[in-house]
Image (cartoon, rainbow over all chains, first blue to last red; front, side, top):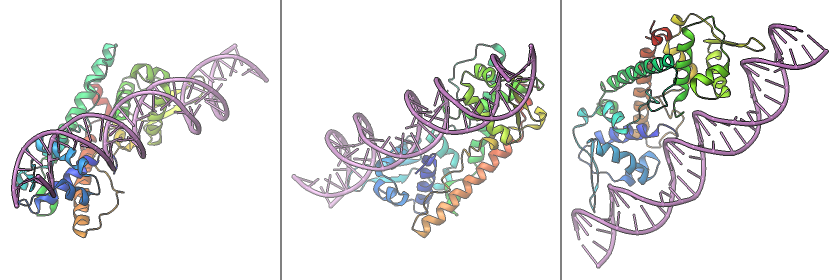
Length: 134
Length: 134
DNA sequence: ATACACGCAACACATAATGTTACGTGATGC
DNA sequence: GCATCACGTAACATTATGTGTTGCGTGTAT
């Protein structure tokens, strides 16, 4: 796979699960579908579980399930769960000495934050069930 | 610096230049302000020149200048010049064998493309002179 | 008790971004 | 003409990040 594959993997998996929310799926099955490794799947899906989008069960009949109705899971939920922060960045960069530069830095960060918010809002308009085509 | 610093560096530099468009700036000066290396600056600014946002002059009194009025350069111009493609991704991933998966894959890509377009549109609403505060 | 599936740590590997050095080319000023 | 300055570019090291893989522990159902 390549860069930004976490969001892609999460979206594919959730959309797929939306087609049959009752079914319990193992990370091995999901990994096969996605062409990757069960551990990678658990890593990504673990974040979604922390965000309350998925539940996981150990043991014999264990696996993964949606934590709520697919209509109630938006792309923004997924994006935020993965904590990617696509456009906003370098908030922790060392502050420039020059005060003019410092002010400019804050302006740039502010604009990027605004763009990020806009992105999240756009993502919030679509649910994973819509992605699937329902 | 850290990841995604190209967009940040480009935005800072252009916004700074917008404050005095006539002034010729060397990559060494810019690198000092940005806390990076002249070669890195030339790499990033080279892309902006290819996109027609900047001009560069070699030689004794050489350096960088805006190619047009700062009001006429939007964040979308900068973003597209850098060819980053933040949200849309893995268009070149190997197509899944299962036809259902293939259809889902196209749906996901389509949604992400839509989000990307929305992002560019949002970026197009702000010019670099607005970032600076004019 | 056994099999199964997640949780997690540790490590190797690949890729990309960035920092750095070096050298070539073009333009200016003497 | 020559020295100087600044960009253009290649080459390489360094770092960061993501991904793949193995191994082992823990919990659960049969």
